[in-house]
Length: 202
Ligand SMILES: [Fe+2]
Image 1: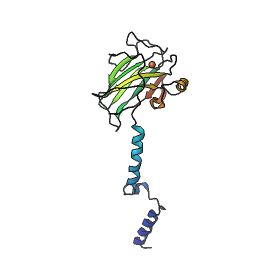
Image 2 (image 1 turned 180 degrees about the vertical axis):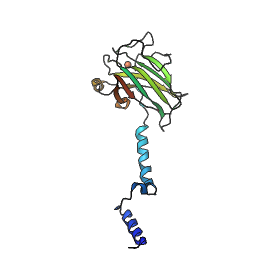
Image 3 (image 1 turned 180 degrees about the horizontal axis):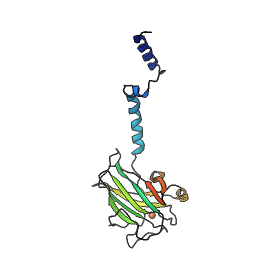
């Protein structure tokens, strides 16, 4: 078989889908491009659904202090660090987004006369935030949750809530949605860690 014939045979096999060249060959060829392009939109669609709005509830207090730790000194409860980003539906980070948190303490009680477990912060240039708190307690009729308002500069605020995996009351809570479950829920050195990316329809 001549070199020309070998190439013809190889081309014919490729047309029939019977020969799979090594990945390095595919990556440099036109064959690879349609496959890579086809997969990308599906991934973006899955990641970029806006975070759903959920009810504000009765306990929001405006003008919370600016701070990343909303944990009062000496407060009881399992320490929790929540990190993540604020993104647009096209995956762009939102810098200087306002995030205003409020939650019950570890016993399930809100501070409605002061600002315990309340605070706001701004995302950094990469759209990132960090929250230091405790895992909120249960109170009658609700599963564990954190309330939050997220607002891109000069845009309307999204009001929603975040939830925690493995809480039995999630199943009976009328507000709960798995779309607002924190991700990568884990424990390191006794501290609970989690992530959540807010996606704003802006
Ligand atoms: Fe609440």
